[in-house]
Amino acid sequence: MEFFRNTNIDFLGKKWYFLSFSLIFSVAGILSMLFWHGIPLGVDFSGGTIVTVKFTHPPNDGKIRADLDHAGLHDFKLQRLGQAANNELLIALQEKETSEAALDKGKNTIIGALESAPDSTRKDLNNSSYQTVLDSLVAKDPLHFGSDSQQKYQPIAQQVMSIRDRDHGGALASFDELNAVGGPVLQALQQDFYLSDFSVRNVDIVGPQVGKQLQTQAKLAILYSLIGMLVYLWFRFELIYGVAAVVACFHDTLITVGAFSLTNQEMSLTVIAAILTLVGYSMNDTIVVFDRIRENVKLLRRENLADIVNKSINQTLSRTILTSGLTFLTVLSLYVFGGEVLRGFSFALVIGILIGTYSSIAVAAPMLVAYQEWRVRRKGVQVQAATLPSAKREKVRAR
Image (cartoon, rainbow, N blue to C red; front, top):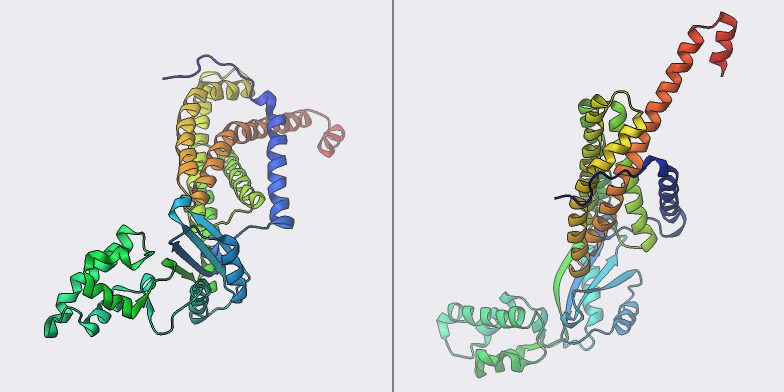
């Protein structure tokens, strides 16, 4: 299947427009990283605590911010998860302390700030574990199982946790939702537990030292991938092909990271995975163009290199649009429908697919032609200087 046949677009004739486009976005990203937003690092790299909370009602962001601020937490971020009807919120707390105990304290402070009216005499059922519920039922023994209570109450405790977590998303709004467990058990639970209006679904804690290590490893992963691509293309084609492809990949990475800085979106481990993915994708697209250029150089020896490169790009244009277009539609769907958890990952891929496809045509190919033309001019000057008298030869070399 082909979208275009026998196209004759002068891509190299528009190289200055491409260069202007690349300069504008690259410089804007660099300025943002240096002077405006910097590189927004998520908890994965900076260290801290991420608490995922499920509410029994639509959360009031303003009240939650005020409660956290009143509890002494000022450097935090709130983010909605999934659809609004899910009533889920992500609270990210940036921690500068280096001890895991301090980070755990931050988690407990978040939970304490969300509890508007904690009951010191009873436990919170929405944030209690299976073992806590089981121990309470065994101690109360509302069904009078006696010596077999430990074993008999295990399925009942599991039923309570199943109703809470599977049927109500982890947060019970009322004890009436537990009617299926029976009256005596329900009364015993009401005596030992109360219901808060939220449930902590997940807690991730990353120490600052681990965050710094992840920063270093992420940078090395990108660097090693670029070096590996350079060496591969050096052996498969020529060194200039590898250099042009790596420059194009670096260009793609720079613009993608710049886009995160300009939009002030956090960089996480999943974003690094997306950047490594787009490095490979961009390189693959560049290799397809370079491979066609190499074939046409052998077949069209008498033609100008710029014309050969233009013809090669036009010959691979249909394939590029098909593969890149389908991939772009997939990652765009992921960005639109994937939710907040995949937002950074999908955003990086959306930008990366567009820029990666563009750079194969507008950065790598013109750089290859510019180098080859420079080498021909340099060789011509050297030949000319060799045929002149010694005095004139020195003058040519001085130029």
